[in-house]
Amino acid sequence: MRRKISLVIVLLISFLLAACQPTPDEVFIIEKDTGRMMEKASSDENGTVADALGLPDGNYTFETTDTSGRVKVSVDAEMITPDVDYLPIARVTGRSFTEQDVENIYNALCDGATPVSEDAPMPKPFYQQTLDGLLELRDSGNLDKYDSIEDLDAAIQEVMAQVASAPEHAVPIALNSSFNSSGIARILCVQNDAIVSDLFVINSTQAERGVYSDFIRDVFNRTEFAHQSAYGQAVTASYALTRDANIILPQISEQEALAKAGQVISTLGLDDFTCTGRRIAPLFDAPTAEMKAACKSVYEFMFTRSVNSVSVTYTNDILSSPPNDPNTVSEPWMYEKVRIFVDDHGIYAYMWNAPCTVTEILNDKATLLPFDQIKKIFANMILVKYGDYIGDDASKNISIHITQIRLGLARVTEQDNNAYGLLVPVWDFFGTYDEGIGYPIGLDGYESLLTINAVDGSIIDRSKGY
Image (cartoon, rainbow, N blue to C red; front, side, top):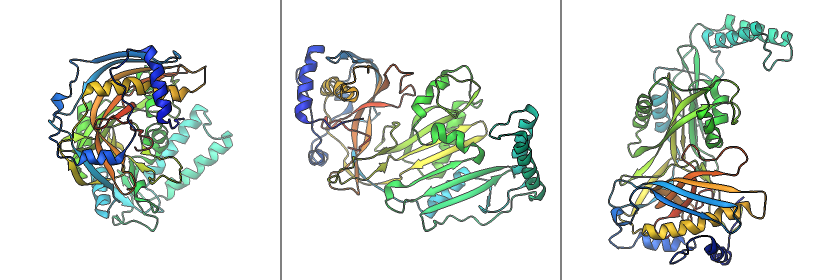
């Protein structure tokens, strides 16, 4: 979907674009060069004070169109910068979860629950929930997944037998936070003898870049959660559902929900993480623009690492996956983030991807390009990027609206050093893009449509990690 563009082609396109927009004093087309980036990171310059970047007063506004007239860009964006004098550059490396991490996660999410064996029978109230649901189907005449009333009745009889033979209470076992030979620690636990919660903590057996953990409070809800929110693929598309009249919002206030999420972060010992995003997450089996029935929802809070009080900017990108090129040195690497979902009953679900360790602050006073240069780079490269996306398809038109421009940190992969990444200052341009085939992508506010390295002006492709 995204092609590599040679410097010659980029310069040619930039020349052609000049006919459709005000000609900038200088066109900035910066090739990626990690060596140059490292030189700047380790320089002994005094750095750039954030207040001296030359930001506009109020929103930044701008409009442009490519030569074909098929890519239209409008900007009316709030400028958001960290409340610090200087931004740092730091080196990070991925790490595996430890048994202590597993215990911390369990204590944060499963306090008061009873750990149980995976193959042990559940208590009566657990099976009773299933039985009640089947009986409700029987009374309504709704066969759901069953082919006939006879099949439904057989299922009812089977669950009734489970209820009859099940213990009254969950049978506890000692908490086991160790990892098996596949690098997985799994803990099932029962709350109130009725709700079975599932916690996975996974260290990839092939590369530490695949480590993650997740938790669902009620295993019966795993399907509806995974479809919409768990892996981030449908979040931005399904966010349109939050504007539907049928959406059922949590009754708990957002501040109360955030406090619960913050307590989890505290129990995990993630004192250097901050909440960098929040939204409503709809729970619906199929992300459609129109809901036929009521749709439940939960609060989602996103937490990312901070270095010297500057946070990594949250985006919807899940991982960097470099192209399958024999010359590449990088492997797929999930972006580090914690996502916590809260409903009226507490923590509904949680995910912690790719824990990292900051190994070194290379420069605590990075030298940044003035915003005048950044906006020139944006004016050219936003058209290049999405013009390349539509290619020669004359039926495609893209309308882009930038609503927020944020200065923060982003992780990029070091050249010829797959073990480390750099947290560098970047400008992210958030907004929506609309191909006119349904609804805009990015309504949730966390779709970065262009990421510019604030130090050297190069374009960062978050899907590739550099």
